[in-house]
Image (cartoon, rainbow, N blue to C red):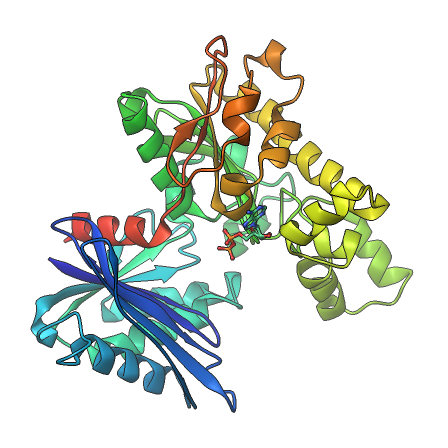
Length: 400
Ligand code: ADP
């Protein structure tokens, strides 16, 4: 079975084609700068685990329709293609950021589902409209494939009300759906399942704290394989300190910015989403650069790193309390997979909470799933490289 995974953003389309018999990626790439004067398509095919064909073409990509049509041409190309004909493609799995309370599982995209998705787009105005555009066009370009939507929020639909409700007048929830939804669900689901398998545990008996640290960062408390709490809230702004997002702040800060500093709601939105987090503290949102400055004892970088790790540590403490028994603390995504320093700062002085790191294991550079905890640690500390595209493909296949 061949499944194409699409992640359509406002000006890009990321794609990966999977052969699900082996769970292997056989082609993939990115159409970027859609609608701009100079766009580009990167495309590669993979055979027996290594790159078979790679190319980057600089073309104007007028709109998403043009981008996806070109991707389809490349996938079907007699020389550099990975599909012999379009009918080989059983399904397209679409990443959809927000599924609100309507979607706790993947869904085949019917007319009704499209209507429902449009209705909830206001909850993720930066993401859902682009995801929907991707679906609409994929239906035209791949008419014989089933279109399946896989939601970032779905994994967190198991949160109990005491974790997802805000303590504000209840009509805001009942009439407007204002509650914690949580994001990065495919990643939290993937690393939980992979860790349980790696440790030889049944997922339904497995408790974990999953720490996804990319440009966006979030944590989840996973009890018996199900999400019971998550650090992001109504939108992907809450919780941890991120590349450009503030994470948790006292809500009165927003009122102060508005009433005392005269910022408009869109200026506040921009400040908290695009100019805060690591960028706000250091001027740079790329942790690699900040780590370099940290090594040179640069003050802003040191403060930013301390704040970033401290926020994660506080959530680890909270989720130990929420879960009671914790089998594993799992780090993933760009920072979680690569930064030994961040992992070490998070796990420092946590022995009383059952977390003890093996320093040497933590320092090792590797690409695969591995254990970083000392043998005396009650909680296993793991690094699991995330694979959100594979998770979308697996969920799409299971749905079919
Ligand atoms: P995205 O959320 O866009 O998928 P990634 O998961 O790729 O993001 O993570 C991006 C973050 O990971 C950036 O802050 C980047 O600096 C950081 N990162 C990537 N490689 C390393 C590394 N070797 N050491 C430290 N941080 C890294």
